[in-house]
Amino acid sequence: QVQLVESGGGVVHPGGSLRLSCTASGRTFGNFAVGWWRQAPGKEREFVATISQRGGSSYYADSLEGRFTISRDNAKNTVYLQMNSLKPEDTAVYYCAAAPYYYGDNISQRQYNSWGRGTQVTVSS
Image 1 (cartoon, rainbow, N blue to C red):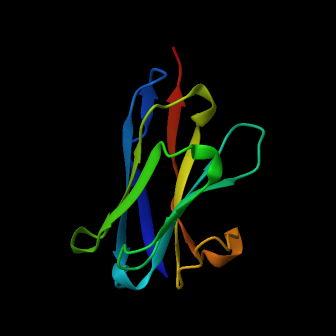
Image 2: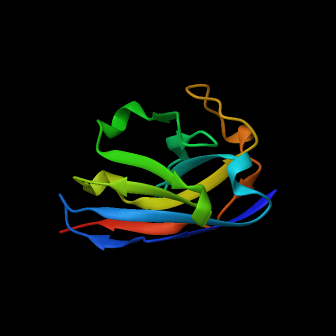
């Protein structure tokens, strides 16, 4: 497993942007696919985006409408989630998670065996 820490959350106005970071320690980060998930109050955790081990492949939730971009820098042991044109419905705790394989559009929380503690994103006017 790998230890993950999210950062970069905060409060932003609708239409604004944030970049979340997920920094890993422990085992070789480049061996893991990484996903971002989010959980809004009173709702189940939902998939946001995932990226393959070397960053060559990625997949996003359809609901994002192209507003988010996932990327990674294995030399820095970090995965990023650039979030643009934020909406109030994007308000949630955002989690990153690591998986031993890249599953593409075959999405399940059970694929991920390491999770961070989350970072709060609040979109409000």
